[in-house]
Each structure stands twice: as C-alpha cells, then as structure tokens.
Length: 142
Image 1 (cartoon, one colour):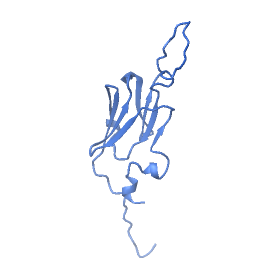
Image 2 (image 1 turned 30 degrees about the horizontal axis):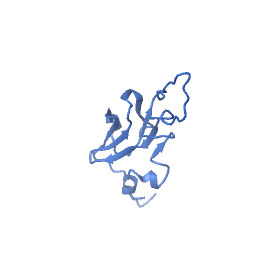
Image 3 (image 1 turned 90 degrees about the vertical axis):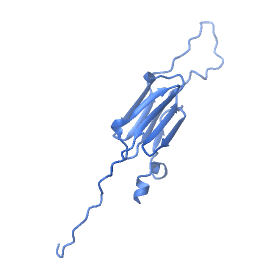
Image 4 (image 1 turned 90 degrees about the horizontal axis):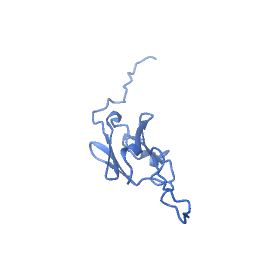
C-alpha cells in the first residue's frame, strides 16, 4: 500500500474498521474540516454547556466526545396525561469516537462551546518525520 493511502485520514472508512463510531441512538450533527494546520470538528449541541460534554483521547489516537449525565426530564402534574413524549427521550444524548491521523499533536487539542456549537481543534504536527527506510548493507558472505 502506498504511503499516500496510509496517511489518508479516511483510509479506515474504505479499508477496515470505521474511522468513527456512533455509540448511541442519537447523535449531534457534525462537520470535520481539515486545514493545513489542524483538523477541526464542529458539533451542534443546542442547550448543552461545557459541563454537559466530555472530550477525551483514548489509546493515544482515538478522540471521544460524549454527553455526561442524563437529560433533564420535565415533570408533569399528578393529573397530567402525556400523549406524545419525543423531546425528552434521548434528547442531546450522544457519544462519538474518531481515530485521529498520525500527524496530530494530541497534547495540544483545544475544545470550546459557544452558541450551541462544540468546536474541537486538533493541531497537525508539521515537523518532518524521520524516514522509516532502513538501508541494508550487502556483503559478499553471509
């Protein structure tokens, strides 16, 4: 497999297990952008604050975003009858995981919640990597 395919961030989508997993029945809509300097994840999470969201890196390169705690349930009076209850069931519940590319600075990830949008910036490591090619000397005798 060529080096360009191995460094392609969506390689696992096409050649193996998924690059991201949705671990719940409901997810926050998201965008994943890539600039020359960083990968940028944006999630719509209206009504949630930074205290409601957890962002973690597991196993060195798996970005995990999830909601902590349960949703607030509306209480109804003793004589109230619910006919439809769609909003309270799983509202805002989500958990997503993404395998990050190898060229990121995991220790410099930043996250922010503003106006119902969670933005996560994962900076790229632009420093040149040492070559993985090892030259083998050829001798006349083994």
